[in-house]
Amino acid sequence: MLDLGQLQHLVVLTGAGISAESGVPTFRGHGGLWRHYRPQELATPGAFGRDPKLVWEWYDWRRGLIGECQPNPAHHTLADMEARLPGFTLITQNVDGLHHLAGNRRVLELHGNIWRMRCTREGTQQVDRTVPLPQLPPRCANCGALLRPDVVWFGETLPADVLEAALAAAAACDIMLVVGTSAVVQPAASLPLVAKQNGALLVEVNPQPTPLSDYVDLSLRQPAAQALPEWWASWQEQRDSRADRDPDG
Ligand code: BV8
Image (cartoon, rainbow, N blue to C red; front, top):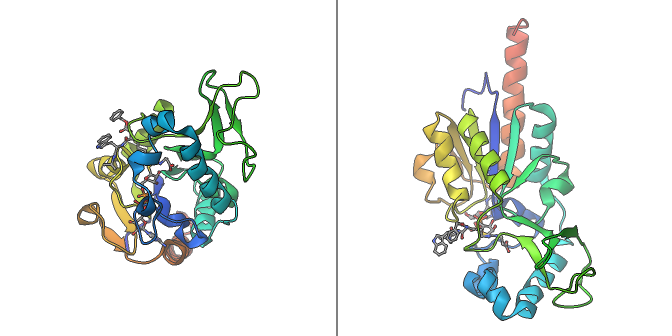
């Protein structure tokens, strides 16, 4: 078990795998979303420009599926960590909004959020949880232009302020938990290496090995909904027993 005594700054980076046990299909795993579609077909500005209705049919289907999903014990563990650890930062690649639903309030959403839409003309954003959408593609009530999902597509840059905050957190953390990501999508996949270069311990939670696995200090080869609650409970026991032995801290 890692020596977590003086854990001050814990960063957690999550990917689609943390939502797998909630019923949200991953992108590259068995039955993954990308299995039936090529990313270039749907999650790119070009695809949207060519066929906005097709792209919205995919997102409308995903929104309908995700809308039925609830956070699982892994999500709830991260909400508990945020409540108990002042130096906690949650960074997610996911767009499903399940971290907010579980109670996390400070979430760095690198790739946006599937429940937000953006006017392609005015740039205004709106949260809309209607499933199914009454009209595909949806249009801006103000100017009539197409609305798009407020997510980051391949070939698009991530929101600069969010990426900057994520890089700063990665560079300053003592431990980074990397949960449920295949670690292939950039620049998110570089965050664990930034943490390691700055002296952090890396813990990977993933039933499968990934390109990151050779660089981590601990691999928990288990599903997140099992591994995270167990890891968090054992860390708190360790901390409490240390406090009993040394009440002056
Ligand atoms: C950028 C939002 C600068 C949309 C997503 C060539 C051409 C063009 C670009 C590139 C290129 N080469 C590289 C790039 C950059 C590209 C990239 O990284 N491509 C990869 C595929 C090589 N990146 C970008 O384009 C990014 N922008 O670089 O800007 C720029 C600008 C202009 C031109 C060039 C560069 C933007 C990337 C963001 C894309 N948007 N999502 C939407 O969701 O609809 S990415 C998408 O993949 C999701 O966000 C998802 O989260 C993300 C990563 O996937 P994972 O989360 O890791 O999910 P995955 O299914 O892959 O893995 C699940 C894992 O969970 C598995 O390991 C599995 O074992 C594990 N698991 C399963 N069950 C469990 C579990 N783990 C724990 N518990 C379980 N129960």
